Image (cartoon, rainbow, N blue to C red):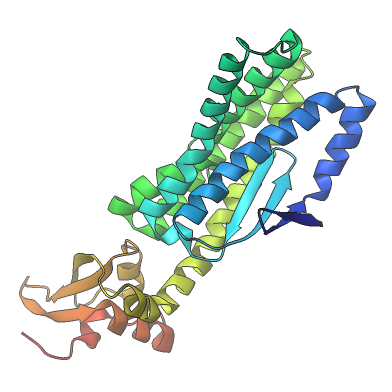
Length: 294
């Protein structure tokens, strides 16, 4: 549900957040929830400022029951260096806010219960967002590291798998604490379900994001003019589907093709491979794309 704009960006609130507000009001916890809302807004503002610093267009910001998410026009996920920079400022902003709160106590009389809750909420958000679980900031940092060794597709799948394992651990811990009589365990269960479903969505979207990235590769070359190069070696019988799994955006890829005896046959550029992928599918052998044999 769109409720206005923030820093000139459309601002949406998930309907479940209003359910959370009603529940908090009924339990007498409305001030605490509003404080968490302010902390989430601070966290997301850090992401927005980092995005604007790197000239990224933000399409909208959505507030969720357990945090927020900023959506970008650019394919941020396919630029590991940029994704890492935008992701890490969120948790760092929570540390900064904790430092400001601590320092302000020397100049302002902050009620002890408000101070304790604000510090606890900030610390919790810092630790929670650093979990190596997509779509949390820690998961995005993990993917940006894995991309250099595994390629975008596999890095996303591994990061999502870690997220789903952590989500299962959260749910199990929540159920165990509920069994022991601690009602706070319900929160772990809800968080686990949220992380699991979000990771599943990231995993499904990875194919779409990567295909969109490849479709825009030609225009990216024209815009950037110079790109880093990443070289791969593949046998002539390797399918282009297997090759693209190893692509590491935003580099341009050159594939050295060799026969089964280990002799070099030729070279295939990334654009040639992408054109064949969209024209004939992933099953085409990379050896058939070699035009000028060595």
